[in-house]
Image (cartoon, rainbow, N blue to C red; front, side, top):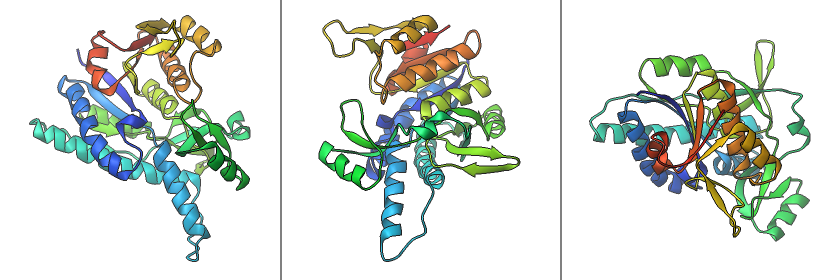
Length: 309
């Protein structure tokens, strides 16, 4: 039975730099085409942490050089990352679709995510962007005025504000393309904007791609939100002797696990929170967390972790 799916790609589906990304999207495209050939409507959202961090640092370096390139705001860096990630993804998908005898069109939509100017996240930056650093390098970055945070045991990264999405500005465009039978790439990181009457003002922040994906899935009336990550299922007591992998979680249990601190803030926690948000938005909606290559099996109930009301 055809389903409307929002697919939130994790960083492992895109690589950490331009060369890795161009290779990674080829494998990513093969898995996504499988969902399309099964007759599903698919919107692809994606993260952009390493990419937007790279762009921002390159622009800052250029600004400080003798060339004195004008300073580029974070919101513009996010837009630039959406453009080149979308470019690679849509071309990889187009090629794979044609290889498999399908002429479904693919389009990337530069997507703005509305946030509240009063969001408390602006007072406490917490979203990792860019490359990983050693503790010594992180201290040097802190001395240069950057906010740094240890990221789930993987190293230190720069952090910026991560306000919660309250609306997706281009939602009607996404919906129209879907209904016309197209594949849509949207809400990639989400360009954070605040509404000032008819004007949308970009702000210095990044929006968590899982929360942006959940908001988009809710607005376009998706059946499934699939959050793709580096593990097949969600676990409690992760990497401990009593580690337990979860098949299905109801909202009450998911909330309890979050309160117990079962999920790392820079890793699995935002994924579970986004899944909870979508599952709670309307009866019958399901969120699936799994590996990219297991997405079809997850929809069939064979693997992954499903969060539902």
